[in-house]
Length: 284
Image 1 (tube, rainbow, N blue to C red):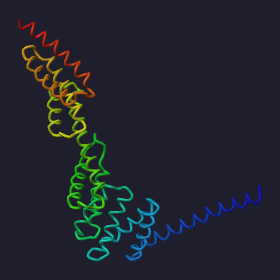
Image 2 (image 1 turned 90 degrees about the horizontal axis):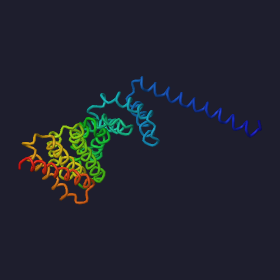
Image 3 (image 1 turned 180 degrees about the vertical axis):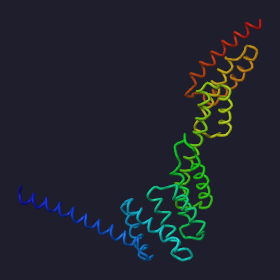
Image 4 (image 1 turned 90 degrees about the vertical axis):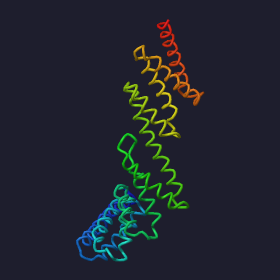
């Protein structure tokens, strides 16, 4: 091995050893402060970890900061430092992605400090926490509804706010998610071949979501469901139900003359004409 290679080897070896020593010292200091009785030491170390984590994104540092802050928070009540400690706890959870906790903590922060200079930021981050905690459309949407309420409050309160565009975008996204959930539930009746419930569910969806991106398929599946419901009916009531399907067909082609489902809709309508012809022959 050359001298240069030896040098590199020992530099790496001793660099690793030094790093281990520094980590050990850091952990030792943290444990000592954590177990100690000095609120000031705990706050100062928590602030150091907090700022370091904000800069480099290290989750471990923020978790240590949060543990120290939560330990001293009860003793801070009624003191000026309580506001900054409460904010750091809320924002620390937000930074590490613990959004359910940060949403709740920012709510508490605003209730405790309604005149805080961080009011707008706290309002937004509380709403944004629930936005980020909102699951995919097929799951329970409790956090989605919370996020929508809080985003709307933010927009109403801070019409020229720093986060206005982001909040508006998030609100539109969450509303679209709820629309999709409602649409998928309604469409599920169609796929399960529950034709009459499908018609009612899709009709309700159309009435309740006049600007939805899912209106075209909703109108089509409503028509198709009614058509199949009619053709499976007794002859004595088939015409009435076919007439209703015809209304749905006409609505679809008027709204979407070049729609995605136009070819299929025309095919179904042609099949309906054969059913009408059969009924006419029976009535002769």
